[in-house]
Length: 489
Image: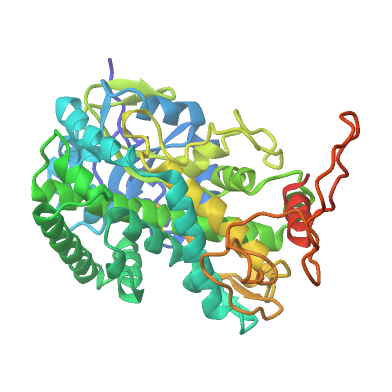
């Protein structure tokens, strides 16, 4: 099989560049587009330009003008993640790592560097490590977690509900996933503002990212040691006690993987769903009118604005072909989640409703498909619904075009989402969320269909009733009527 150069001119000399004044001036060596710098300010537009120029797979440049392929087609991305005989996530196979052009000092080194975790392993080692993670995931009680998500949502809303204004990114979307994940990992006492900010910081690749990563890792290493000495029933304890016999380093590294991937994805997902609800009247009308449920709204968002727009990377284990392109052994490829989700071959009409369709690429696929996607969905489903029930009149403060985004090759997320609403009284965090606090004389989870009464009626004297006579239908209470209206019944 003849291998194809990344560079259309047929040279791998990265020092070549278009002459000044050339229409291609400003592009990288070989006239290739860069996925960083000024040209990459709007990666959505750049991906579509690349699709027009190159088709489903396009040659591009990473930081320091390191060549790589970006996969834009939906089917081609599925092939990439589902063919472990051809593609690996072990970055040590990448020519750019081997020749040092993507070495430890590369700006994307935290994304590139190999680690002893399941997402970088393959074969028997992958089965061992991922088996331990999946085994720990299988012990999570989803009903209990949904109750904790509701409780954490109430705590967060109580912090700002009396003020009538809030930023749903910094005060809600960035906090809810961390509170829930700390509970799952068995370290609820570690959840605080500093952990939230450190996690966000290290994912942004700032000048303080290394220090933030050390802070997070120190917490996870200490937590692993505590659970090794005294196990409980949490995720970490199950991971430690799994027959795969993970070392402390492997345990803490997998806790980091779960914490960072699940946190970033879910924080972005929450913000994206809330943004659409607040800015798209049709979307909100469908939600309020019962034509769409919150889980369906979440799934639509996973198509339109996936939490991770791209993943670096996959690496060719042999010469092969993807999307008509000849891929060399040792080439790197980017999993193009966002461009794959809007591939015209699968979505000719981007305005078409995708409810019930889970064929998006938001959680990857194949052997490395996200193992915690159900947790992320649960946080978004319960959190968004509970917040909208508590603040049914919430509105965006300002215009949609005033919203600011922070973008990178891997993700695009809102900086803030300012809203206003009628001030509400705090509610008991154990209660089912409601527009008005439920009266405390009733048990918090008791469901009743009786209308409120001034005083309890005396019990009627039992008397035989004709078998054929139907029992009178009682009227629904205000809370039940609201729930039926909200859910579209």
